[in-house]
Image 1: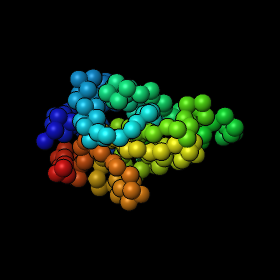
Image 2 (image 1 turned 30 degrees about the vertical axis):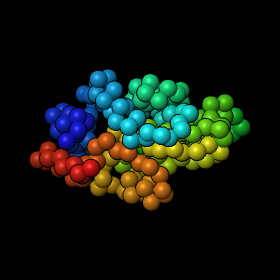
Image 3 (image 1 turned 120 degrees about the horizontal axis):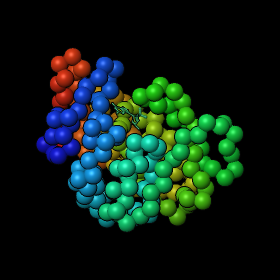
Image 4 (image 1 turned 45 degrees about the vertical axis):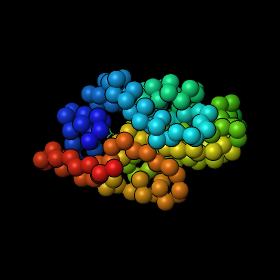
Length: 193
Ligand code: 5GP
């Protein structure tokens, strides 16, 4: 069991509706020592890849991406959630449905910060149905850049995102894959990796 899995068992809370709450260490209060360990693991798993940029999505991915960026020695760009629907021209845009908030957001990245020479590592805190990642992939493709890999902290393996992303052929490295969780008993079972 790795340190993220151990921490999830210790401090994660299973909520009704397939939501795992990890806000005491991952996406509200942030344990930077843990982020460093996670980042070292991604660095190892993506060894030999030519990565020029990390792309994440606001808000919860940003902290993790910034720590990871120190190991890859590259800038971080985060896709911003935008209200306006009229954002063509200077921006790459994608529509992303939020798993936790159940609403749709346009996410945008300025054309200044992503281009066809970029080799991108996508980083996010959670993978559920894959909407957030598919939006980021769409943005990378619109820029003519290359997705070199995807680093996720917690994948919920009982939802469809992991299968969709792996079937598309991407190297997806999730540090903890939750196979089952039960909000009534609080039990969490991880996939062996
Ligand atoms: P997806 O787009 O893959 O359905 O969901 C991924 C996004 O939803 C992540 O960026 C994350 O912020 C949020 N999310 C999905 N599932 C969970 C969960 O169980 N707990 C928390 N805290 N966030 C989640």
